[in-house]
Amino acid sequence: MKDIQSQHDPRRIAIQKVGVKDIAYPITVLDKHTRVQHTVARVNMYVNLPHQFKGTHMSRFVEILNRFHGEIHVKRFSAILREMKERLQAEAAHLEIDFPFFLPPQGRSAASRRYLCAMHGSLCEREEIEITVRVPVAPPLAAAAPNGLPPSAGHWGRAEARVRLADFLWLEDLVTLVEEAVAAEIRASRQEQAPLAVEALTGAIGDRLAAQPAAAWFSVTVENFARGYSTFATLEGS
Image 1 (cartoon, rainbow, N blue to C red):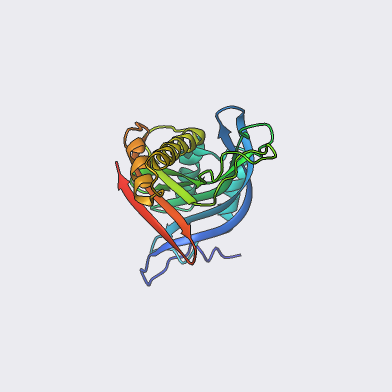
Image 2 (tube, rainbow, N blue to C red; image 1 turned 135 degrees about the horizontal axis):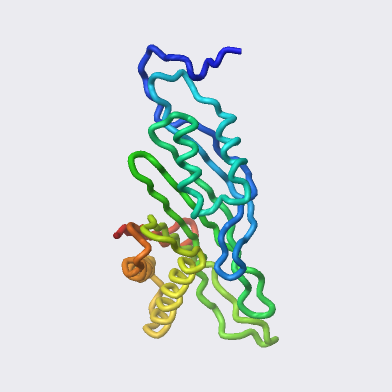
């Protein structure tokens, strides 16, 4: 059978992105307290297609994914990207993994805390790896219920922190950084008897990320889910 995909293409038109997306795949994520955590991710893998090739072998993306089965985490991103770039003879390779990440409950009656996280990596002339966490923002609405149940929390919005890594950073530490900034702003707004503002939250999280040595670059977006619309603020820094 002819290898049509690798035949010469006389049109000399380079395709910027070609690959596979929305693969549901079991992965292992590094966990600071239990060493590893097993979860299920949505994976996108793509490369550029040099103008001299008619196409690429899509099955090779999944082959590479299977080769690293059980070792798909931020410390292995470099190896996966190199394999994609070399095997598919591409100038640039990209890997995007979105997944739920769980932290232990706070309190006996609480459930495990679930966060939507992502790891995105690119390898062209140099490598860039980013991690993202989305943290719910839920200010307490009441001190304590008469029946002794825990305080109720309001569904206010969420904060997203995206960090381009200069060094290794635990997902747990990034979540904690965001939660501590949110908690401090909630306390300040209650003391001042002022509404919680997306601008203040975004600035508070940005200040903490700016002091984080593992962050070569970062962005913060805070959303407030209002009735009928949403408000938001965003910033970038390094």
